Amino acid sequence: MMIALKAATPQLPRTAAVADHVVAVDETDSTNALAAQMIGDGSLTLPDHQDGELAVAVVAADRQTAGRGRNGHKWISQPGRCSTMSYAVRIPRAIATDESVNGWLQMIAGLVTLDALNGMIEEYGAAPNQPDCLLELKWPNDVFCHGLKLGGLLSELVIPPSSGTDADADDDVVIVFGVGLNLALGACWLPTPQSTSLQLHVTGLPSFGEMRDAVAERQVEGFRERLAKFIADPKGQAESLREEMKTVCWARGRQVEAHFTDGTTLTGEAIGLNEDASLILRTQDGTDHTVRTADVGVL
Image (tube, rainbow, N blue to C red; front, side, top):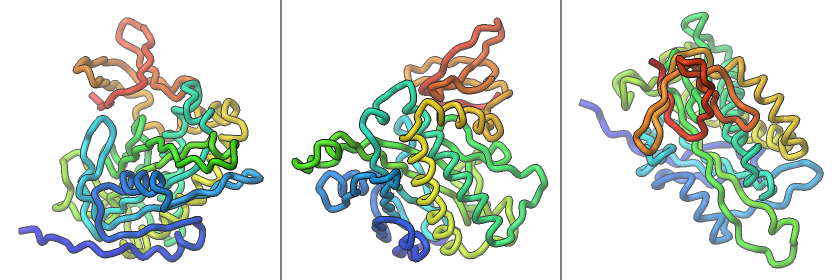
């Protein structure tokens, strides 16, 4: 019989040292929803970006009662075992709404997450159980390890209240990046057969609290650095990100099936990403199809 774990307010000293704001609660319905609510009512503010330096706010909870994924999916987590964080960053509206480049915002979130996890593992001298144990991204929003889901990401656009005084600031929006990671779940706690946890693949990890804080600290710094570069040169960064994704895109080179929200499916080989971060799926007849919104599973 599983024992229900009690939620506790996350302790995030390292994250607080680098973030502009940290809001930590023991329990909430969704960290993304809480972040959006606080931005909307003005209780969580982000200063305008100056000299390329971006403000990053963090909303963290030990338990989510209504965690959300893409396309209405639920995100199930356990307190004291799973990291549930949202990172809010203010960016120009023109970039956030430009469909030729805004798909890369989700890819940036994934790359930031991989960097943070790998950096934490290296810092603590931990090591994968198997030499081929790589962390990868399943387009467009999952962290994978050995073909199993270790984490999920959800990005949402939030319109901040108008300041009424700064026209440039009023042309900004806030992107909230929700990141859920199974860090210390034992095999018996996994919510589905398709999910996994970092501790099942890596030995020598620190305590859950240390892991959560070390990963979040790196994510704050990663979002700040990567998004500043992207804002300065979206098209140039898009091409660099496209190259970077070739090494960590789990779907690339695999036979996959894309499931669309209208109930249709498309089967083919995932051969890479387009310039706008959409997935290229090559069907058996040699035709390349562009996939922008779908759940993609391997065959």
